[in-house]
Amino acid sequence: MTHVRITNDLRETVIAIAQDAAAAIMQVYAAGFDVILKDDDSPVTAADLAANQCIVDGLSRLTPDLPILSEESPLVDWETRRHWGAYWLVDPLDGTREFIKRNGEFSVNIALVYQGAPTFGVVLAPVTGLAWHAMRGEQAYRRQGLHDTVLRTRVPAQAPLRVAASRSHRSPRTQALLQRMGDIETVAQGSSLKFCRIAEGGLDVYPRLGPTSEWDTAAGQCVLHAAGGVVLSAATGKPFRYNRRESLLNGDFIALGDGRLPWRTWMTDAEEER
Image 1: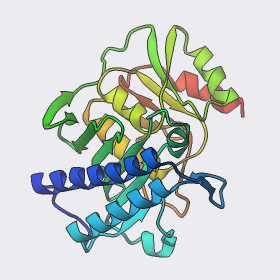
Image 2: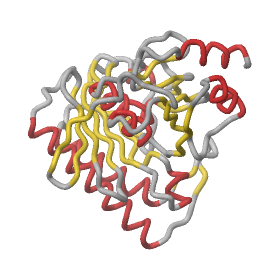
Image 3: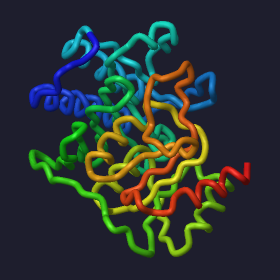
Image 4: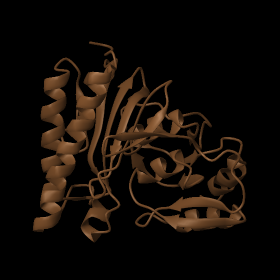
């Protein structure tokens, strides 16, 4: 199968799957957990694995013909992936470091990617139960309980710019970039919740200098784009595309609520500092 029709039933089922994964995460969160380091030195816990099982099982039942690419499942080789027209891209627990710190700033990310672009995305915060969801070409929403609120980014963005700064990944290059941005207010925020905060107008900019993986950004990108913002590659100035090469690592990028901001100046200087 190369495509899947995004119906209201499919959207609600995927949100329910994300909620099930969140419940599994919170069970581990409450009970305590051990931390294991993977081969790349990134941490993993029983919550990551339990959430992954919920999501993979749920999506496999929902769309048995669509492949699933998840951070916590065995990696699919490029020769297989390169032929995918549509697939699910999943981070069952984005922000494992935030989970370990117990600050609540972690999320469940599920995206449907078609021909390299996220066409549907769900980001769910297990601690609050809030869910952000969007279909490409339609509006973005924040769900609280049974109520959906339409999201729009803050346009025009005005000083002081409210800039998302990762709690766990703030490098010297990022610090220098923040200084070049002028009159700003930095807000510490973990995981894909940064994209969601920009989508709802609470933040304006999220610069990321350093590696992320494709499952870290796809769902949040879908939500932010539908709310009027952009996620742009620093190298190309274009929105991220997915499953276009063997590596699953993203390059430097910037997420903006207002695409007219002078982001190239900020990021070009950052490239020169390499």
